[in-house]
Image 1 (cartoon, rainbow, N blue to C red):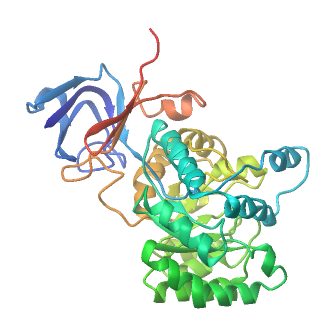
Image 2 (cartoon, rainbow, N blue to C red):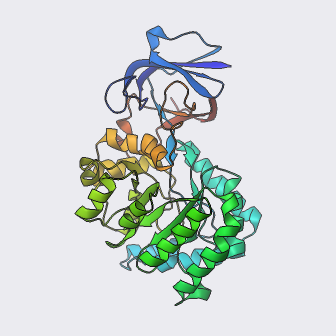
Length: 394
């Protein structure tokens, strides 16, 4: 069945050939979905007929958000750690070990239910594609369970085999990396698409991270990197050297790091909610963008440092504290996220692309930053059908 969405106040296509600017904006627009794909976009006055018609009464429509960085397979929470941090205790990467213990002891049913709950939150705030990482098992059996459960919900599964050394490997990070490379990657690779590593003080150094990425690539997994979150370090350069799809966090980067990213295909994914929740330095997205680096924007949902699934919240942070324009932030959360996942079928509303879109309770995408904290996503379309919908009270 074909579906016509018409009387759209502002349509963001992310197709510069279709409309104005990098967002390809069309005013007084319409879009047609058919068989799960976009069939037509353009001015409402020129819209073709369709089997079903929806008058959006001047609302804005955007591509669905593409969440390219999340950690959803976990148990427990770290609210007390967050409270202590807000009282002045600094964040250290080792807090992850609390979640490792809870996740290892949880049942499959509990983990599965938690992923489903968080994905429902993500969908209601507009995320139609979500990448999910493992990384809170840190044993062969627990990581295998994590990637299998993630794969029940998304095709974008990342094996974060090297998050931090687990307790039984305390002081023996090299031994843990050797086990990851010799056993864990081989067992988990059939159930994942990506390999990731946390290259940071308190986690893994350059040589250890290099070994993990090399072993992952040999098993057919494409590299991603957690890099330069808490300190300036080798994460960015390592990601570029491995032709990684993305390097994520990038809060502490040097001019050389920015130059390397600008000359590469690696996307810099900024995760401002994590910096908000840790009182960390925000990334200098302005410097990245001005240098020509491709930037994605994600929520980084995890129980320790960014327990949010809201991309709209992250857009507001990006505009306010990362000095991105609203246009740049929206592009980074849609087309940028798709680039970070090396996808060209999502993050854009153009003929032949997936019919994933969000309808705002607002006339323009500008309201995502202009009205921070307000639940403006009133309807989400996924594969051409309504996935979730609500209307505010009159």
